[in-house]
Length: 222
Image (cartoon, rainbow, N blue to C red; front, side, top):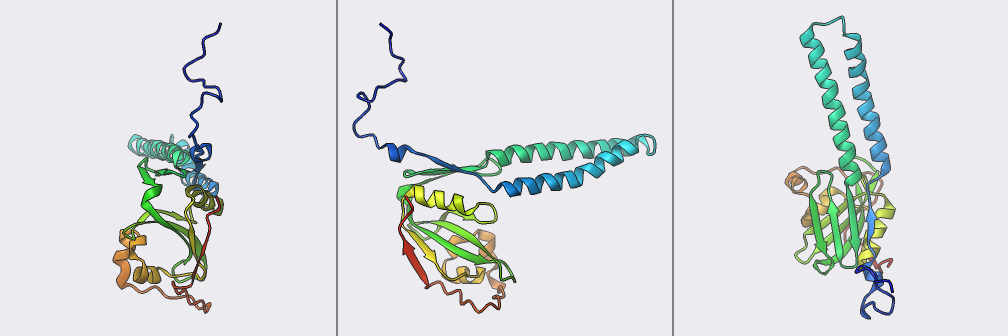
């Protein structure tokens, strides 16, 4: 008779109140295009340094060659560090809440019970008619518990976070400017964005009003 390992449970032995849907965790990661752009930038900076270091083997003084060699080492180390941090940057979300691992390794956890609304909107870029999607998890005091910017996260990632939490989404139909958010919802912005409130951001000439009262609610995609 074989003894069953401690980690194994038959379906009959599983607790009756286990909610398998609630145990599912979705993990999203930043846009891969950002990773490719970073590697191109690193190659653009590092390749000339390496070429100069090799060419200067007999051209420059030992001190200059040493400085160039250290420059190459620093670029390689920083590139490796950035690659490692990028690959570990992620958001894991379930109906109970989420955990964000930032680029520099900082962990931020948000419990679903602390989120009162999920806000989606299009934010104008400065002095431009182009917009980027934004997602905000708003707490009970109106502050932002988590912000996902379209420059770093694609639409599928934003959808996955919203759907996994199972909270009704508020979608603002008209694009807004940073100035609009400073006036209506300063708690959603980063501290440095709020401090720049004295500088007015020019509204694009597209004719879009960007009024914040034009919003609609739609059920979560869960």
